[in-house]
Amino acid sequence: MKLEKVITDYYSSYDYRNLRDETKKQYEYFLNVMLNTKVEGKSLCQYDCDKLTTRVAKVAYNEWCEKGVSMANHVISATRIALNHGVRMELCTLNPFANVRKRSTERRKTVWSRDDVAKLLNTAYSDFSTRNIGLIAHMAYEWCQRLGDMRMLTWDSINFDTKTVHIRQSKRKAEVTLPIENDLFAMLQEQEQDFGFQPYVAPRPKPIAGEYRPYSLQKLPLHARKLMQQAGLPDELRLSDLRRTGTTEMVEAGVGIGQIMSVTGHANPSSVKPYMKNTLTSANYALTERNNHVKSMTSAAKESV
Image 1: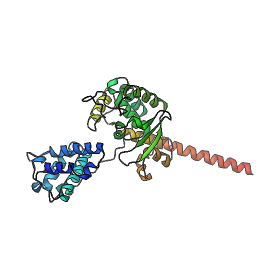
Image 2 (image 1 turned 90 degrees about the vertical axis):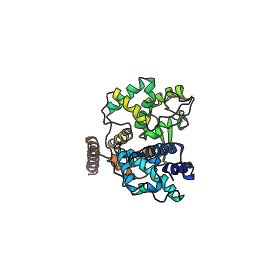
Image 3 (image 1 turned 120 degrees about the vertical axis):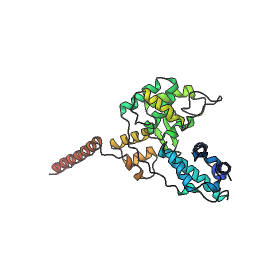
Image 4 (image 1 turned 45 degrees about the horizontal axis):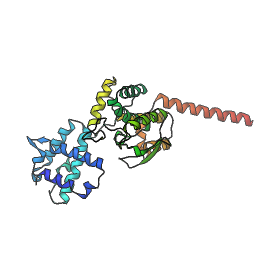
């Protein structure tokens, strides 16, 4: 059986149909990348499953890694899931991608400066065609949330009466309710006047076939890069760094881990540790708090004498 037919059968499976709509789109994209990859002059979609070897799988994975290790790992993960379905349904006997070792990705540590955030938002909000990208970035930074959840955010998540937003995170299914600060609230009010007739808070500004749709996982980074270049921002910055930036700012402000978790949605304190850095701001806060404590204890001791 051709590999393409195994993937088609996976799309009709209960496991696939039970996925969230956005997850389905992601899987389809990653599996299409896999099927269109050429190994030894032939696309993988043309391979017979019984001739798909571990060596072929490794060659394909290495090619994906040339475009980015993170992307390659997403593609191979989706492929493994689909081929495991094929094995269970006896459409193929082996899953050669299961034997390919993923490369580890180095954890990013890049954070934006306040000035860089301001440059991005000022540039984005000055043009209607880029305003929605700016709003996605603004919400991700202000609420310390993932870009994917912000691009899919719908108006029913926002309560204008209480000035709060309720977010159900797609990755961990955590739910957080957060306040909306004044500048972002004013922007959302203006946005609601222009886009409140359809479900998404920050869709693509031009409809497709008469329908307003969210930015896709593939298109958002491309449009964002053009915007960031227009704003004169360093090439090493990414919009995905904004969640880390906002969280790091909370750490530097001396916010407790429990309070940070109530914003970010992390379930384990160890997940917050990567955001904790040795900075002058953090050190200054810690030492100032210690000195204030020592002074108060000393004063109390003198008063008791």
